[in-house]
Structure formats: C-alpha cells, structure tokens
Image (cartoon, rainbow, N blue to C red):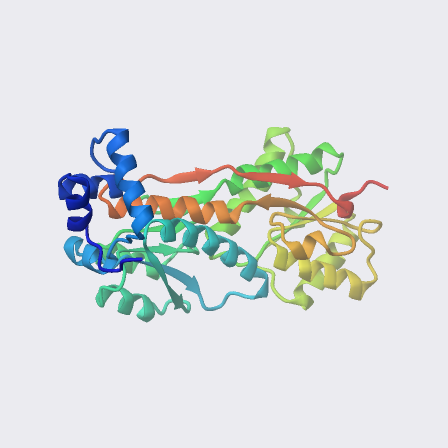
Length: 333
C-alpha cells in the first residue's frame, strides 16, 4: 500500500531499533517470538516489501542466479530442464532472487563469461555435467560460487545429483528378479557422466546377485533411428529378455525401430527406461521406467547455492527420491 515505507518507518512506529526490524525480516539474530510477530504483523498490514536493489548494493549482490543450459538439448530433454528449473525458480524466488539463463553450446563458454565478467549473477548452476567440462573449468577460475547438477569425478566441484546409481541398480534388480537374465543395455553419449553412472548401476545389479551381464548386449554411443534399428535386430537375434534404455530419448528411438521392424512390445521384446516421462507413461504399451523427482533436485541445488553465496561451507548432495514404475512393456506372457 505504501511503496515508500522504510525500515526506519517500521522501527519508529513500533518503538524498536532498525536492527531489530532487520533481524525480524531476515530471520537472523535472536528476537522474542512476540517481537517477530509485531514486526511481521505491521509489514503485512502496510504492504512493506524489501528494496532488493538497495539491499543488493549494501551487500554487493545482484540477487540474480545464473543457470547454464546446453543449446543442444532436444525435445526429450525439455521435460527434465523444465522440471529442474521449476524447483530452482521456486527456491530462488522465495529468497528474493531472479534467474538468468545462459545457453552454452559445446565448448563455447562466451555467454557464461559475459554473465560472470559483467557481474550479472551472485552464483551459477550448471545443469549438465561432462567429463571434460569447459564451463566448470572456467567457473573454477572465476571465483564465483557455483555448483553442478550431476556427478563428476572432479573432487573440486560442488555436486548435487539424484542417486542414479542406486535407482538404475534397483530397476535392473527388479527386472532380474522377474527372471530376465539376458538384459541388453542401450546407452547414448559417453562424454556425459550420467551415461557412465547409469551403466555402472546396471552392472552393479548383476554383481549383487553374483551374475555378469553379457558384454555383447551393451551398446554405447548410440544415436539415430538407423543405429537403433541395428541394435534392435542384434538384440532379437541374441534372444535378449529385455532392452533397457538409458533415457526416454533412446527409449523413443527403440520404440520407433521396433515399429519399423515389426517387433511387438512386449511379445517379441520387453522394454524399460532408466528415465521416466509423460511420453513413456502414455505410449502404447506404457513403458516400465525409473521415475525421478527433478523438481526436487532443482530445489536442493538452489538451496545449496544460496547457502554457498551466504558464505557457508559447500556440501555435495545426493538425493534419493525415485521409484521404479512397472508397466505393460515388461509384462511376462
């Protein structure tokens, strides 16, 4: 109601110090519950909102968070990035921050460099992790607080990720528990760390049962319908029980290849995915998949980055919020 209302005004009206009002608003410092209630009630009644620009100047902050997304994402990746951004946006918005999205193509970090060198953000979240990551290498030199969503072998990176290893292991164990021993694995780009993690989860499930996967049924760096058709033909010829795809894009390619080859799921070949989506849920037949809460992942990453910006010691976070959803694609005839 009163856009010119200041902390001085609130302090004078309530007969308290400006420091007390600031602490009641920020939640920092020791105040009695009654004092906090009085300040909050006055704020609610008079429509006061903090001046983030002035607060930013006082603290040398922009109150912006940079989020780096890859330019080469495809339609299948969109759902992941959208849900992750939802989680990031919710947490940063509640803290009075805005999001600046920087689109990075391959090894070109020029957009990220502009964001950092022009002092447009207080911290950065990388939404994809690679083995040789030029964006992460640049940010390490910049001194700006940042973290990666994903798992990296680089111990110097602050990492926030879903427990893909445990999730992929669990889905594989469920399939092995159904009596499927000859599982085929379809993997994509080997430069992404998530690819190696999902493969390790697949192999770990076999190890825990004292078994070994058939190495001739593991197909990596697959892309495109033609390559996938070749894989499906080979999988059928080798009498695999089920084809496990590392993500929903590869699962979609496998479904297309099966249709073109006249392979009926699950009668001729069972199908499962290490990543769920609405596309797989509503396909015919619906596909067994590992369902992961990406919105929660974004929220956890945002909270950790804000904590780092506040000067707290960074911590790696491994989020175990997933479930295996069994659907018609792995039904036993």
